[in-house]
Figure 1 (cartoon, chains in turn cyan, yellow, orange):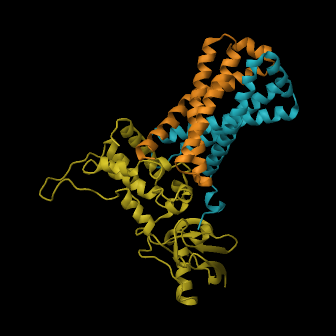
Figure 2 (tube, chains in turn blue, green, orange):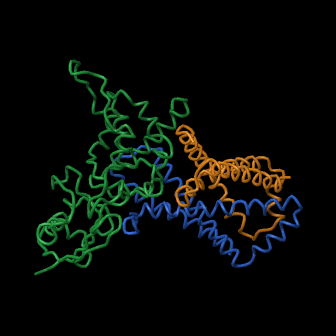
Figure 3 (cartoon, chains in turn yellow, red, cyan):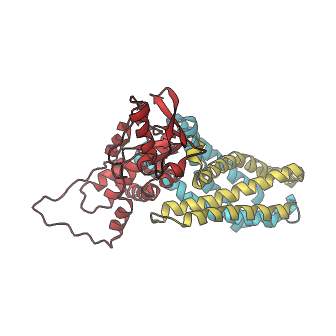
Length: 118
Length: 237
Length: 112
């Protein structure tokens, strides 16, 4: 028998889920991103016409989402690297601080980007 | 009389919950509740316990969805609106009622070479290990495991990757890896490397979250990750 | 796959992650700065065209992500969908190569 959310419902598990989902989403987005930038090979005009499409508010909104995902994957990833490469004691009080910090850093980047792009 | 509404898993892999009313008492533990049901209401109820004081690691069950040692879990801490739901440990086959089949769990300890390999005999001098060495400190932090299976039952990597050795076995391997008297440290590193071993861990930290002894198997597994990767780089794996 | 190879893949994913941490930080800062007065092809290409330091940094970024992403997807797919075995490993390797080539092509596109 498997566990349900009652067992999984703790902060570090949610952090894992955010990391995994953001990683998958970014992996799916990357080939698209590369393809668009590759348009520049066919002249600045091609790239420009695509960039005008990104002026659409819905596109801008999803751009903010992508920045949030990237910032979350970055800060969450740094936390995981600390967990794996820095030996830590049995009662890690810094965990909760680290989680709060990752959330804060992601939100800050998302907000900064949003303020600039909108 | 104040009553506790207790749902208990009956049957094997397939089965269902049966409900019993149990009188509430002060300082009652979950194990007390199960024992009351077995002695007063349902003599055929199967469950496992031995010491009742948090040493033997045999009474772990899933209480309201969360794996716990039942002998040291007070009802007052876990009941929800006067109700308890008690099931066998997850991630393990069910034998009957609240008894999970632990063979897989302990089999993986064996696979992880979870036993001490002596290099000295009784005629040798006592080994002198300074408590200040990093190895001794690392072993110390992980040594108090009672083998209850709570971490194994709580681990999603175990659910998603049935070959995965699990937090307890890897934690044990880490204490032995740090025991300078042990004679099979290189072989053990071989046994715990790879996706079925320490590299399979994704640091959910559910093991540490649920461990009744407040150990952090994730920290031990991280140590093994570093040690195995280093050995692999040096061609010693 | 041998345990040794799996341990090395784990290390490759973490090493690429450390590299990515620096690259992504740079990328986030660049993005926040670049969108301040709206995106235009002229402005982007004006910054990147012929800029060797920029191209080198982003070529490294692409390499790191081409190592990191397929290994991450491999874990997700084996655990959540049961996609394991040699054929799947080959598919993830292919995805990594595709990312590297498409990424470098894009870097070249905005550099030249």
